[in-house]
Length: 229
Image (cartoon, rainbow, N blue to C red; front, side, top):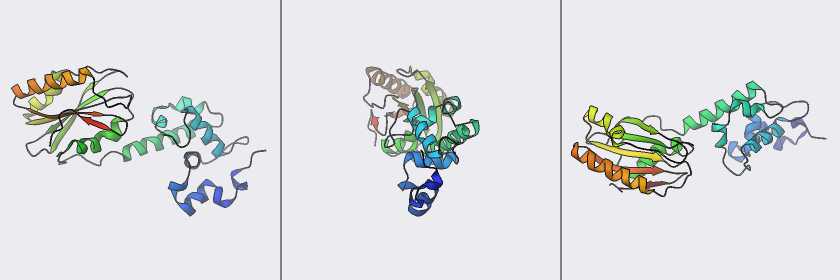
């Protein structure tokens, strides 16, 4: 017979455990149980949370990134998870995603490739598609605009120089940085990555625009192709 949450020792109940020891001491399933709030006659909220984790084929020590991609319908496939609970889980996952983004890039100065990684890592590292962005900078290396220039599939992304340079030319911007992610998490540049870098560098020079860098974002790692300083 399964114990109800109220039948567990106080130090093992998710709500009380968080209050006593802090959120960092809770497992993934315990944190999810708090979001779910209540269980069913057959399952505790903790049991339901553990079943949700199996949807991502992940152990508790691994990533929870699948919660950003899983659908409400998939969450509802767990018996005991209705639409309201599924929406609660999705809402919290989106909040976590947004919290990882900088509050604002306005007047942010880019002086090193790490600055770009800090700005875009959490947004791009979990993407299943290749997304290319261009950071448009002024002469002080301050970001004045970030533009999505291309969205591809899971294994490739065709980045056209005209897509990258269209907005900077309109704005009369002096500098740009190209950024794209590798959904695999591997930051090793492909031959295509090097070719598009060379093509854009050459064309941008002709247009009076300086390509400072082309940065590849992986899973917690990045690769700078031009290593600007």
